Image (tube, helix red, strand yellow):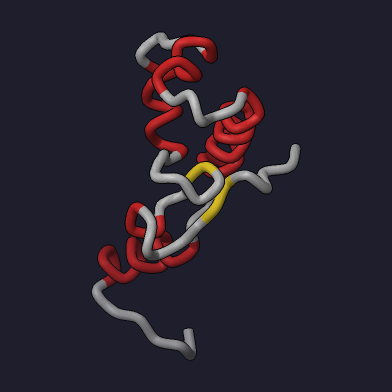
Length: 89
């Protein structure tokens, strides 16, 4: 995977969502803009303090994240389906 060192997590910034360089711009915001058809130059005009590498890393992070298995969510789903959970199982 390409580096994602510009993607930060801080519980005091945007509720801990993945952000760009500690700014109040989330990866989700960038991905949403791209999904709506905005280009990198469009996004850089909307957020002049961002850099093209920020957008590239947001895309890299989002692509990686959608492929990751979230074990706690999987565990909660299993508990919901079975109605119980035992550490000995």
